[in-house]
Length: 52
Image 1 (cartoon, rainbow, N blue to C red):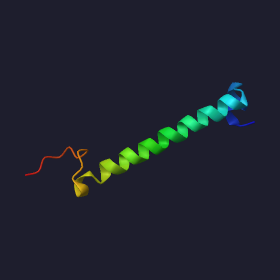
Image 2 (image 1 turned 120 degrees about the vertical axis):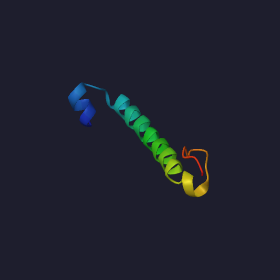
Image 3 (image 1 turned 90 degrees about the horizontal axis):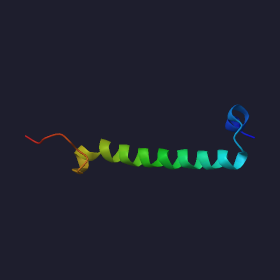
C-alpha cells in the first residue's frame, strides 16, 4: 500500500490511477512549459512579447 491508501483509505487500484493521471499532467506541463520557454528563440506562437 502507498501513502494515499494509508492516509485517505483509498484502494490500491485507485491510487495507481491517481498516480498515472498526475504523471500525465506533469509531462504535459513540462512540454508546454518548455515550448513557452523556448518560444522566443524558436519563434513559436507561445511567445507573447511584441517584436519591435
